[in-house]
Length: 205
Image (cartoon, rainbow, N blue to C red; front, side, top):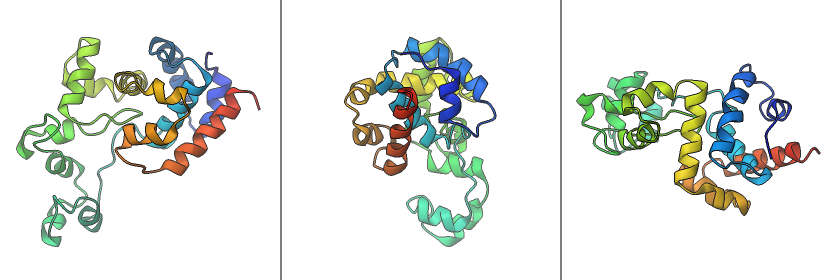
């Protein structure tokens, strides 16, 4: 099974860069064995949810202070602290992602440098390093690559492969796929709706 440009246009009908996305996916899906109706549908459904229809390939951390308190209470335990970081994505990322996932401390800048990127958002120096190693590039180079069409798509394919997600796609198990990608069941209904819609497109209904 090979994805066609017309099918992708139906999957992301409002995306103005559908030709560029297709050019990347046409090369990458076969390379990573995302090559059956079930696998392609599951992959595109998860990517469409994670990226808002292939629009957002970098994590949006432009939070107001109230949202920081609600979303990251562990890192912003007081109103006063949250207000100091409001609407400063770089500082927010550096605080929230400091000292985990292979990142250095807040002052290192790793949090923002290795914030969520790609169609399935890779996060943290460890993941960037592993992805970069698969291509023979550094974590910093991977960071830049993931902000291109090809890099955003390949990082998602790589994540899919190393987590053996084709196994769950072959079963049509959207719940397990969502947990493996999201760490929970956030957006499960939307992901399931995308999957059903894309299956119909690929089967020609």
